[in-house]
Image (cartoon, rainbow, N blue to C red; front, side, top):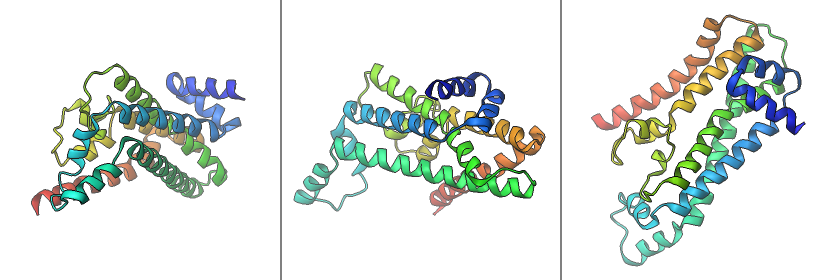
Length: 233
């Protein structure tokens, strides 16, 4: 079974249409999520073991000017690399799980409207395999951190294929969080989803692209509008 999962993983990268056919026949959600969990632990453990923790604490506490003396020392003690790594890993996995469930629910609803005979659990498997691009990006992050020499890298800029890194955004940019969440892995995930939806629902690539991209554009568009509103306030 593990060998079959590795084969599907390889096809996700080089032959996504074939990969979705294999996932449809005998795919399981546990393998891509296990890969995502391992990649998340490796990437963020590497990050917090190499980052200049005093510099990062200064950045995170920059907006807390009211903290003084003992309170500031307590905040720094709580923001040690171990706790920060644990919080980041857990929150990342929770967000990924919520994203997977929302995606599965949305695609299950669309499939019902398209009269596609697929059960809800099959779309959970589908959504789980969409985590592969993010897992690959996290592994690239770990490699970059292991080979890099700069200990002053913000979490939003740690991913080498994120827009924040590709565009070279400064740490005080209001767009840093959004640009750190979007990258080449996002485009890969969208393309992978379009191919899968087209394959599983037996619809054209154009219709599949509309089904996939509309909620994505709404989500990131709303995020961008919130940032613009904050700048205008």
